Amino acid sequence: MSTNQRKSSTWNHAPELPLQSMPYWYWPPRPWAVLRWLFENFLQVSDRALFLVYSFVIAFWLMPFVPAEAALSWDWATLVLLRNMVAVLMVVGGLHIWFYGIDVQGNVLRFDARPITGRKNALFLFGYQTWDNMFHTLVYGVAIASGFEIAIRWAYANGWTMPLSFSESPVWFVLLFPLLTLLQGIHFYLIHRLIHWPPLYRHVHSVHHRNVNVGPWSGLSMHPVEHLFYFSSLLNFFVLPAHPVYMMFLLHWQMLGAPTGHSGYEAVFARNKARILIGGFFHQLHHRYYECNYGSPEFPLDKWFGTYHDGTEEMTAVIRDRKRRMHAK
Ligand SMILES: [Zn+2]
Ligand SMILES: [Zn+2]
Image 1 (cartoon, rainbow, N blue to C red):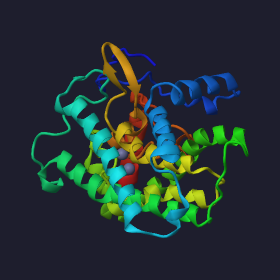
Image 2 (image 1 turned 90 degrees about the vertical axis):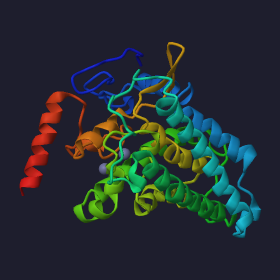
Image 3 (image 1 turned 90 degrees about the horizontal axis):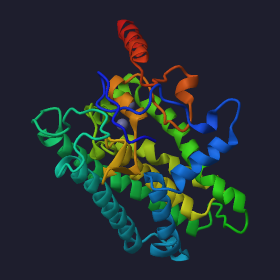
Image 4 (image 1 turned 30 degrees about the horizontal axis):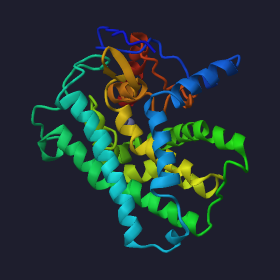
């Protein structure tokens, strides 16, 4: 990835366009490119690598899954909620302060240079985008994510899942991390298309789309029904043989990954270098043009179903034309 600012008439900065698909989907297959990409994204400093490390810390040290969780109790359930609240406040609040509060980075590697906060707008709860976003994130988002975590810890402790250790299947143990991000891409595409169905859009998903230009607090700014859909991906642990560390990874991939992916920047840039890759340009295009990029860049469902926006101006024209036709019906 380059740290050069790439300006265009539409973007303050954009990755190299057209957006390329992830190496998993190269044809003919290029296994070395996949391995290189996995190494660069999971084992060097990126948001997903940090989620991976943090998940190991929780599952093996800070808050392991224990048999005592077979009985639901406020003691441990409150701790789960508290731990998630602190993580979100630190990561999302930290990114917001870095990018928009003390504004360390300015517009370097920022996709859209228009302001996210600022003027009062009656569209938003309490009148301001950030306040609206913080409310939906902290009151509904963290609570619902924690609810899923509590339910799954309870299920693990009661033996209703299929736990798996490293020694039982080392290859599966390693492969399951990237595989989960792929599966989550499919799940997200499906629920996201569902909530773009006009009745659900009006009542549910429009809350998230109040954010035309996005910041870290936009990531989890959703109607609670959308949170329920979004985190329902965690139910896959009822059928997937997996160690609890995967549950923690998927939770953070979504609970902290949505905010990092909505931060509006390609990377945290400090001392002349991109330090932490967080880019979410693929989804930024969805916020600007709506009828495109419903899924995630991990899994090319948008390409297969003709809703892919590769970031180029030609594609913007195609998407705009489709939108006009949809609304003309
Ligand atoms: Zn949407
Ligand atoms: Zn979004």
